[in-house]
Length: 235
Image (cartoon, rainbow, N blue to C red; front, side):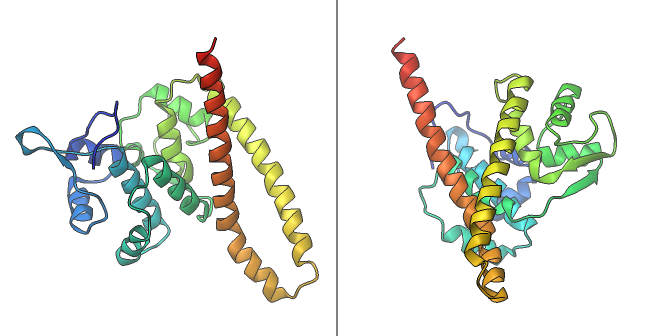
């Protein structure tokens, strides 16, 4: 494993803190083959990178879905060996989409443990603006567990809060429109079928459609960004 250019390698303590787990957990997952080995640097210190962090996030999501450790091992073995951290994030997003909406009430200390970092009053205000937490200055705090990791990642994105909220509005509006049109399409497809076919489609539709939407959006966004960067370079 090598870290991507421009990414600062993490020690095992830093990796555990960023992922919101213990060092013992990281070592345990490594011994089970759930994490690739670290790069051994000077003084025999192990260095970890973005792929380790992405795999820990995926493992956490699979655990929250109720999967056993052996089931998680089988799931990860089926994944291609050359997946990037971005690819792993897509897998995690698909897995997260299976979970029902969950708002938990946790202490501020537990919230920071789950976030993997201390949260300043400014961080809490941004998380509240994104509807990740319900109150910026409360303790205990009501938090949308499904949005927490995304919200914490957005804290470090060099965009204004107004831009992030505008982007969220665009995504919500277009997602609802796509969901409505797809629902109408599938509803028409099964209108003349028996109840067993309807249940079968309903069981399979959610994860398959979410994965298809994520893949399509990923490719479209890559094309848009490529055109934008290419156009900016010619000005």
